[in-house]
Image: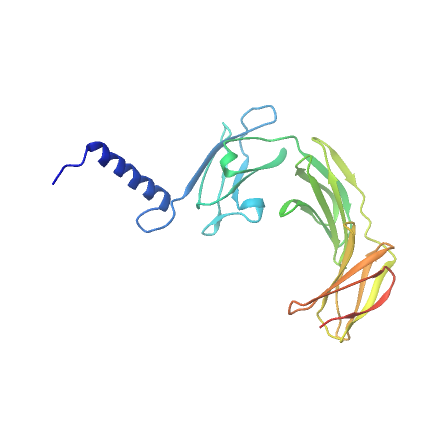
Length: 263
């Protein structure tokens, strides 16, 4: 039997090792991935005590291992190290003194944080306020004086204030580094849309929207009646969502009384 050249044997061994690394261990489980990097201040200095977490793309949720989130806190030299499941991941960095930052995992070897922006407001009694960007929620507060942040600058941030009476005020702001924006909140309005779900039934969720600025929601009573309040004058879109998932849509003017036909 002819002997195989030693170079061929070494090449085969490297290929088998690469396959084992990519496909996982002998149990067939995918090998974990590792992320290492450093977090810096805006001045380029290492930043300790920053929280670095592993998230699915677009920050739709934190990645967990068992009952714990996969996260690390940077050391005195700003370094962090994470180990998590294989796949496309996002590195999310938070610190109370700077704007949050996020990067694809493959681009997170060095993350420089920026000066934060803030929003101040008086949240009405019985209301909550949130600041978000897509699936990312950066801050929230209950009734009373609130300073929401730290927030990322130069991003279209959605500020939403919702009361226990289902009145909602929404506005979008793009802030600069270090800016503190004072936001005025007013949920009171004399305009509403009243009506009845036809055929009459309880538990139908109804939503009123007027562009991107204001919306309201309500649930129909046993006789099908509802009231959507906290609206401004103008055209309003009413959306009814049935408990079993059906949807009905109707456009009207604020102040109208309508029959909302559902099937």
